[in-house]
Length: 465
Image 1 (cartoon, rainbow, N blue to C red):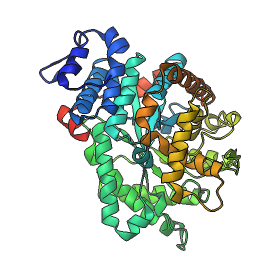
Image 2 (image 1 turned 135 degrees about the vertical axis):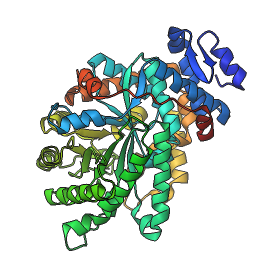
Image 3 (image 1 turned 180 degrees about the vertical axis):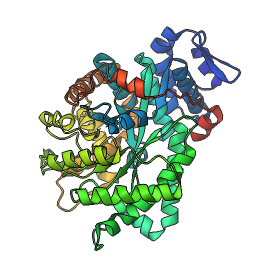
Image 4 (image 1 turned 90 degrees about the vertical axis):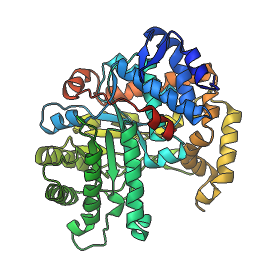
């Protein structure tokens, strides 16, 4: 049901939610969860009117705050980890590409079942583009899912790979950094209080020394960190992540880690005395985003360097007080490997493509809809197909772009299909949460995470819709 005007919104919410002096009053919390929130989330995403999309997001976010659902920074937990006050688990950071409401609901159900507090929702700069999910939208969807599943407490939402494009940077440095700063500002205004800045694309291995190889990486990283710190809402220290090796490239090593962190911290302190540094460091250990598909479209097994991961994570914690190292491109790894990450004290692991695959490959996913998406990809993204790619490889690598182009049709899938896919996603999330040892982390998460309520601004929600 899509609303035509504001009056229809409030008619639908009569006796459930009302506005009073610019704020939201919840009159019937049970009806909000059972009757109101599904329609509000749908309108926050699909309504043709920016006024109604923005109003719906404002009501969702305001209601979430009233219920104790608070977009938060994981900085406190990661600081405690860097001080050896907690450990033995790896925080899953899950990229929300498609079927975002159903997927987010499955994650919150899992968190409640396993008493988990240490988990992150995230979306990368590139994903924001091809899934058509701007920060204000995805935050509303995630918080709406929390309301629907009766979840309370901190919710960690992260901008993943807020990345500098190396070619564009070298063509016009000021323009590229300015564009990234605009995205950072938009993310923070929406409720992204965790941001991974990725300037690893600027590493130049042709330079003679490791410091010179990493120089542009840490210099631009410091500039962006300072910018983030200047935009922090009062009472919130945003968790910022750095990166020393581009995923899919050369494996990272200790010299690179120390060159980056020593010089990053020295430069940050010199330019902004006392500013909080990064909380974690992403490294390259042999994986690639999405995995590497063989000619049949199935992912080829990779040789992940666990020794590198363990060593660099230990150095990051013990010598620099960070939470540890971050593992990217991991969701397509064999399922029996995931228990290794907490054993090695990996701080965080990023998971995306396997969940996407589970949606497309679910036996209930309509075959005619899949064919429609694939035909669209073959027609509109043909330039992305390499000469050596089979059709299966091309589809595997590009079908993530179907989520944005066909967003409304994904929403129109029957309740039976959405429920079944949500159930299968939940089983996968449960398996990963268990393997990553994040069960029963709710208490330590709440203890280390201050709940700072930042009220949404109606005019801003409408303007950004």
